Image 1 (cartoon, helix red, strand yellow):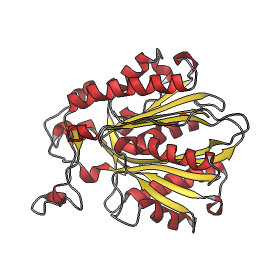
Image 2 (cartoon, one colour):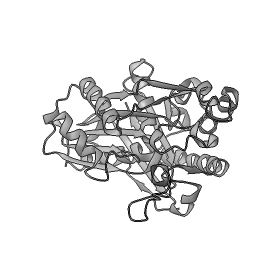
Image 3 (spheres, helix red, strand yellow):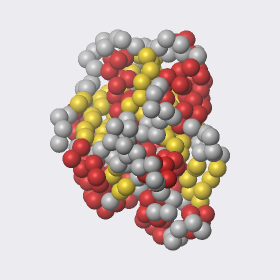
Length: 336
């Protein structure tokens, strides 16, 4: 296991990174389980019983990750009351960028008019938003930024093998965003990041620029490969560990938490984490049934839905966590 990357609670008088606004965006097209059953050998019952997913959103032809991220960003900025000239940094968590370069963050920067600020992408697969949030938190804590736009956005439908029934039923497209602002009030308390590259072949896409594309195959051979049972076992164990680490670092017990906002990959993994925390499912934000697995988009999508529905209230203690290919995993504990 890698060395822990974390930041503990800020001493008195320090600046916190506080969520000032949230936003999200989903493509219009819905793909239901019944729709998939017409394409591959599956059924609504088979998918729901194993994953909890009923439907997912699919980007339109020509609609990019940057398009989804842009709309989520605008909504987060509106919620925060922030204009483009106030943004010091844009960080996009994604594993499906628009281009090899420039970064999707740079493309979004140009569209919102935040000229001159730092902009970068973070690729940590499904943990991308949590990783990006941690980077933004540290820039704010050290005083190098006061307002940071953090986005998680994906168009996973572009790298799904739609003939492979065990993977094509899982993934969807979407984006979520938050605006972090420097504040003397408590915000992000700590983040904790981990990775284990030795397990890469359990969940990966074995195509890249320097390793080569397979020109005789659709999409250059780019598609998601996953050994589901192995991923499930590792994810549950890793998330258990990072939950304990997060609570211990902040001197808290599991009963201090108001909400768990997990990566929306599989309902059974979410339920296992909730059980570990002794939390009833009515204190867990679940969107996997409606969104599927949107990778780095899933945590901010779930957060925005919970905020806009009124379930998450100011002052409540939230635990965000995610696990993804790499393997990567991480958590963020914050006072909303």
